[in-house]
Image (cartoon, rainbow, N blue to C red; front, top):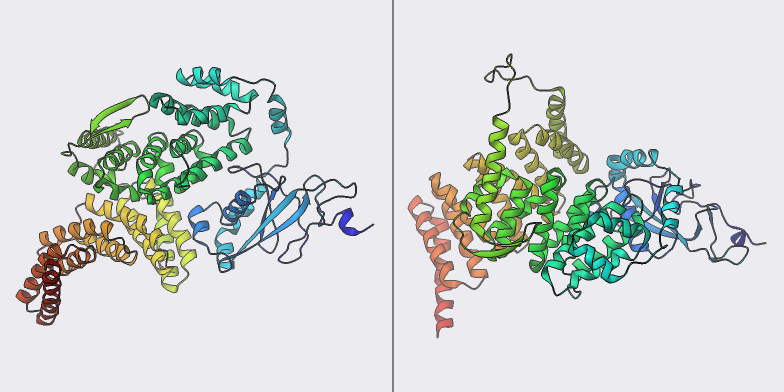
Length: 573
């Protein structure tokens, strides 16, 4: 009898070490996988069907990164991690059958997906992997019972439609518990010609999936994969996909909260922005901390979008989240009389962008007033500063440690510490410390070449500085954001930052920086082909430099202006 037919003991493809049987780990997201780790630091995910290798790979990489999706997506295969597949794995017998069949000739479909990240990531995230495995369970009895109870009855499309129309979530959950096709039948209603039915389907599909997730992670994981796939596929009909993902996260924030990053990533597709903003607003309305733990400050830019639907949804979403850092930007939007339609969870209403901004401002100010009106103890003097808690003092010490690590070039260790103290400062309402920490995190991302990743922390720091009316710090952060957007060649995005910076330095009477920003504005206009506007900005910059006595810079600009004027004459001819 050949050893391959009898089955082999599973071994790590990286170190040849003997592996323990994989176990179930909570939370389960993209499928019914089990997990394990080798002494060499490699992790593995078991897919008993062998049909979900893509999802298993994503889960394995995320597992190796300690559930840090931002870190996972920033790693490069071959450079930051290695991966490998071991096929022919039998979960029940914990044996590998290389030929794909056991001694009796039965097919063995299971696959172990391995990922081994670099030592630097292991040192930072390895303890989190061990903690998750320590809390794991190998029991599937409860899930088998739930699966056995399914498929006893089938519900018609008409029956499902009636419950969706009535928004009868409780009945739909009961139906889905015994009929696995109910989720698909609700999903089909996302393509209904009736707009109200479509929105009801979003709410009900998210609610039913959220209720089923603890017992049926595989079923809900499949739904999430389909929805995210269609949301990312520009060729697919994906109305309601992003909104439904948001509703599932809203109902299961612990299990699927980390998917907020994926939803925010869809902002790169302009047509998807209203849907993303709606989804994030719905999540933030119930679980603001889940949204705030992600890079949600990318929403701030959208308050200045050319599309009123995007501006309005951004204002609504930030109001739902309670993002007080956006208060000043929202106030500037209150005069916007563009009319849009928005679904607020109850029905579709027609409202102006300024109206939505005003609602957001009022909600934030009311929340702030309630916090100020909290009763104070008789023995507590409001004016007496309270000593900082032990947790805050420890966070300040860790901040200093992180800064030292950053200066030494130990970026991942520094990032882990900064993220840890950020959570403490944020929870304690220490916004100056939050801004400083966000700036440091942005700087680390720049050091590592992750230019897009630095935008959100920089934007958050900027929002805090603007709210505090700290013009000097705001200008410094605007310069950093301008530099990043120029590197990314996002000229439409960088222009508003130039104007914000110019407005601030003019208020500070800083002629040198005013000239610098005007030259930058001219450069952007020139790249966009707006030569007249570019010349206006360059001429103002040249006059400022000459007036300050910066003759060399003024002469350089003068030569460039003459060349551009010649180009403009040629175009006009």
